[in-house]
Image 1 (tube, each protein chain N blue to C red):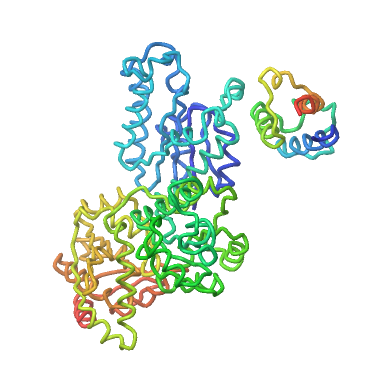
Image 2 (image 1 turned 45 degrees about the horizontal axis):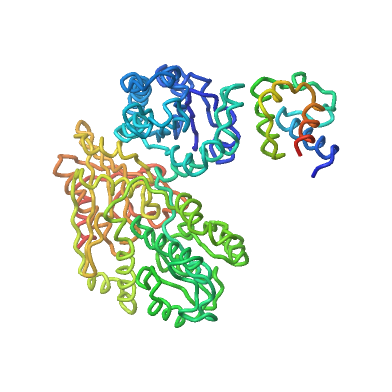
Length: 80
Length: 547
């Protein structure tokens, strides 16, 4: 089972990869829709990748509700 | 060039990375719902790009929309389907050199018609079957069997409803990976880029255990449990011969022990005679692989090697990276499924089959016998001893599939290595200004069938013929058959009233055996790799060579 810190680091890595940015541009408080290169398709790609790489499954309402990086990390920790 | 265009009525954007990983150059994915516009608009990205393959993948729910919420109306469903398939067919006719691949439709397994479905009266799935059947009637179109993937993996593992409702993305990551992998395999099969030989280890591949330790009847091979896995594997490997795949052995064993198990174990589904040039010894397996390829006169890139030993697999991968070496399953229960799904579909895909394919093992047995006969003879005496007869047929449409196979697979003695689609070859056969010549070969060891192909374009106005394609199967190289073939073709050209002939040689890494051929025929070089000569000079020169 991953620690909160490990989960956060992995989520940040995935976000940086999907949005073609760098990890130092992202923090727990970062709002997903404000990340550079954000668009609605990349948002879906982000969750596709998180679900695959981190072996989690979000439900639809959760995915709609996510605002910040911290929201995602918390949801993953609750599921694992 | 390996460019792909993907047309779909749903959002397939997440396939982009998967397609690039599968080796497609700059895959183009049409905008959501613009598949018909791309097909019909001459200025679309599809029609202005130059794509090697076009894949049309339609989602059944999106195609039929509200029609799936009323009792099945076959006519309306058919009309929606035909709107697209007719556009696909029209596009394909305009672009015969492009591989067009269309996925068959997959309806969701849960429909409001529930238990009425299997009855037939109110059945969407019956109509789905009929619509999918109609795909096979489209000319020049190959079907990607998406239904097979859904049966294999299950709808729920390939599809995710939340992505559908949020962004019209139907598939999970697994779904995209499976579809894109299937596309790549099918595209390779359409292009004829398939392997030719399955090289098998023996212990723990064809039977459980080690024959040298367990003895002939002590290995696991039966109609029960683990033994049945191996028996089913043997049956599948044996069945591959019918697809034209050659079977051989590369095993560290005493040959006597192996021959004994083939002779005496009654559960063996494979016979010794099913294999060509088996290599059973204590030599390095990479050396054996080289020897196998040499004896079969095939490149090592034609070989697929299956072995349970990770060390042996690593040896071949590192020393012979051109040989395909799939990973071997750890769980013996998965062995049969792995063999079909990960070996046969991956390396031995077929979209057509000829009678010649089914006789491959016998053909290679005859080749070995000829090679034995050749030992100790000079070339002229050897060729004479074969009692060769050749026959050249012109514009015979009955062997169309074999012509396609030859253009797709012949590398060594192929002067221009042009790969033509089936439809293009059919057009050549019907075109009055194109001659398609095929060479049939037989000798005292047997009939090899069609082993050579030439395509000649006539320019009546200039009284000139151009040899567009000239190729010969590697099975008959080294017997001067190429000059007999050229002799007949030149005489046919002269009968057409042509006074000169041009030709070209396009060098590739594999066709060095063909370099110098046109010079030997009597052509004069005119520019880089271009040749020309008066017909009368060529006819008399080649008659002498062919005699």
